[in-house]
Every structure is written in C-alpha cells, then in structure tokens.
Length: 434
Image (cartoon, rainbow, N blue to C red; front, top):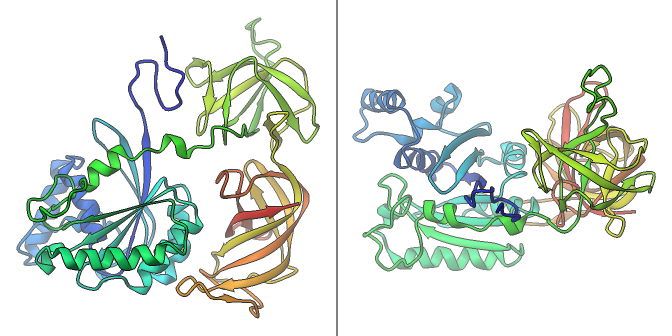
C-alpha cells in the first residue's frame, strides 16, 4: 500500500532533497569544508581529484587542497575568495543535497540572499582562532531574515587551537546570545576541522568532549518535512493546457491547469476556490510528470483538472474556500536592493513578479534602511543602494494573492524588475498586506 506521507514514495523510501547554503568570513575554510564533504562522501571523479592533487603540488602545498574542488572561477582562485553563488550536488544513501556556496563579503550580500532564499538549512563557518566577527553576525541576521529554518554554526579550524573545549564553548555562548535577538528557530553548533576531516563526515577522536553528531550525520538526519507549509493550500497557475489538436478522444475535452504547489496538500475530490473570481469547484484529477497522482504538495509540479469550466489563466491562484491568501494591492516588505545602476527611492516605478503573476508597482515609501551588522534602523534614509536592505511600502496595480513571508516563503516572496531593462533589481519578503 502506497504511503500518503509527503516526501515518501510508494516504496516507503525517503526521497528528501536538502538544500543548504554556506557562508563564512575570509579564510574561514568554507571552500575546504565543501571540498571535504564532496571528497569524503565520494562525490568527485578521479580526474577531478588528480587535477586538485597536481595543482596543490605545483603550488608547493604539503597537502591536497580540497578548496580547489569548489573555487571554480579563475577570479576566485586568484583572489582566494568566493565571488558568486555556485550550486553543487552530492548524495548519500540517505539523502540528496544541493549546496549553495555563497560569498561572505558584504559587497556580495545580494549573492548570499539569492543562495539562501531557497535553503532549508544554512551553515555559518566561524574560525576558532578569531571567534565571532561582524560578518558572522551579518550572516546570522540574513539567514533569519530569509526564514531559513535550520542554522548550523560550524566552528572550524579547531586543530589550530589544539581542539580546546573552552575556546569552542566561548564561541557557542557568544553566538547563542546574539542569535537570541534574531529568534533563530533551530540552532546547532559543531566543532570541526575541515582540513583534517574532524567531525565533518565521521566523529573525531580529537574532541572526545563533544557529544553531538558529525556535520554530515546532522545534514542527513535534520527533519525538514515539517518545514513545508502543509496547511495552507496555494497553487499559482503557471499555464493552461488545452490540447485542441489531439486526435485522442480522451484528450479532446482536456483542460488542465499546470503549476508548482506552493503550499498545502491537494487531492482529487477536494473542494477548491479560484482567485480572483471566488468561484468554487472540485479537483477531479491530478496529473504528474509520469501519470496520475493521488496527492500533490510543495514543491511538486502538477496539472490540476477541475469539475467546472472556469475562466482561469496564468497568474491566478487555487486555494481552499475557507483558507484563502490575502488579496492585496498594498504591501509592506523587506527588500534587498541588487543593482549598482540606480538606487531604490520613493515614487520609483517597477514591475513586481510574485509567484506566476507580474504587475506594475510603485514604491510608496521607504521606512528605513537597516544596518545588517548592528541591526540599527536608519529612518532618515532616502534610498537603498547596492546590497542594502530596508523596509518599504509598495502599491501594485492589480491584486496579488499573498501570505506573510514567515508563513510561506513562496507566496510571501517576490522580485522587483526594471521595466526598461527587465533586470531583477531587488528581492522582497512580505511582512504585511492589505
């Protein structure tokens, strides 16, 4: 009998994919840590390892520099820093992983926001010798702003402080005190040495005082199914499928509404409401990529067939009659400005893309610019420049179907687009709507 638990296939085997982002200050060992995960989980090819070993030898390094597995851009290798977001993939028998390797420098805040926006978990590296730095606090703030459900603080380079428990505990206490101001939901600390592999894949004998799991064990077992919003049904319509030219009699009257589930669980027989019309109907079939399915949940992409012929188009929303999103044209939001060409300022006109709907919008007001290092709110600010974050009011020309970002990151997030260039200029998180 097939399981009806989201994330479980009919065979009962978990097919979870964990998306996690990494961030760290300069020389915290982030690239080495990712390289160690790839190497120790046997997720690299022999020719890749041979290339890294050869490059390490050419540089006169005494060990294989696993950071070279991840610092793929020439500019990154030359400068010794991570510049852009790079996505890497690996798997263990228990779970698949997508790594968003994000830059830690303040001038690349927009890149970190991009990488962390879809993450289930974030790893913040802290150099055991340096302790908590300004960048560490900034990374913690950004991950909580983006509502990343799980946060791991990896205290790296423990080998360089002789695996001293007191050094580790001092960092834990300081970080936990700061994180309490951010309302971090799930915070885990792990002492490790990415260079030598201590507590990365296997528990280390060099730190017998540490009783927790290794980093990979934590990544394999952290519970993410409950992070999905399985209560509020949200189905933004991406495309209407109507195969008019089909000779198959069963497809002659086919009308399906394709999209990605953004929340809740949908099943044939469920009563749903169409927005903006407010008309109710019933789901008759749910079609997946490989045929009919008995339920759909985020982030599945499916096609819904309905009992009634309703005028539905791209940008519309399907929800529950008794559980609807806010229908709003006035939004309050936190935004990260992402373009160097111009500043965000009041009265600016832009396009807003929210789920599958795109509409014109105007910035009504800039309430404050936020200093992500000190959390100070500058209410005298008149604009937002590149990588700056602030709270704004936005007026949209047509209704959007939204939730608070803290409740649903998919229906609570949006991007702002320059009408002339069609470039993405900002990412936003809805905090209020009317």
